[in-house]
Image 1 (cartoon, one colour):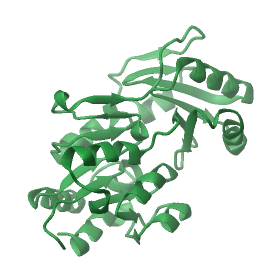
Image 2 (cartoon, rainbow, N blue to C red):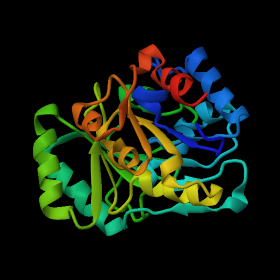
Image 3 (tube, rainbow, N blue to C red):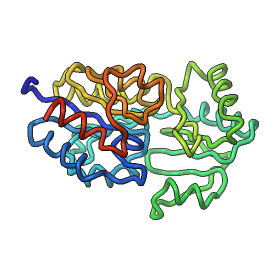
Image 4 (cartoon, one colour):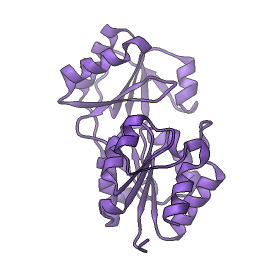
Length: 267
């Protein structure tokens, strides 16, 4: 392969992380080797920064990071790089929250950067998704901030119906994606945003064209990123629709799929 630097974009859950939410030694070593050879490693995730920072630090990265599926892009170590935050309008968020309430949902979470608002207190949800040091505020009808994302945790039998309703009534202003099992959470962000939009900004800052991007993902929020990349790689555990869009399919997240691909094709 050419010696020109590649940008290696990695999703977190189901991709970089094993099922127990750790980075395997082999995968970590392969990414460290890639950095030593002059390539750029970038995390591109639907998670907020607060729940991806630990992995950023563990990998020892010095690159921007894409959070909230592209709704927030910044450089944790160099503030002068810029903070690109594209939130939903508060009135749109309110309409969606009202709609979700009418459908009947288990909970609603609103995130403004790293501030978290919950409709109902839910200890299981809190322990699963949030750092215990994060202060959680109960969501009220007087909510006026422009949120980075709205997360809806519907009852399983309502997931498809709610997504269809969002398509019919809010498609012009929002994007929505569903998290993988075991949580059927619907994540809603501003229209036109995706991981690809965030990565394009990062690529421009490094002067790396899309054809020298290798992107790894597993879920439907990786569609645009996989198609944007010159080499879009679906994990072995990825959903079928993503595998159809990908240029390559590697092993699963439990089988060091990222390391397997990089050792074979880049390192």
